[in-house]
Length: 138
Image 1: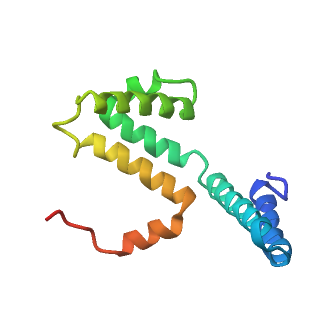
Image 2: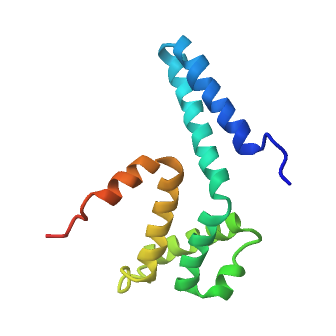
């Protein structure tokens, strides 16, 4: 049984109060600061709603590239693993290790991370880009 209010309820109430009660009374730099806080709260709400799903999808993409065993050896928790794997992949890309296969699993890892980041930080952009036709190389 989950007690109410839960994390999402509290964040929703804080965001609503900030947007409805505080923001209309502000202007200038104070309003800008409050808008940044409201945006951060909205991002935190999306992160709570996603739970560990975003990290799981990223780790699954890395498992396709490096193999499941190598993904699990890379860190204690999901965030540590992703950070270590990101460093490894960046180093490998800089060294040219994936120059011949950038459209395979490397692309899948990078695309997965971009989508997960946009899901948290700018879901409206992501939704709009899904509705627009893909850009083809000329």
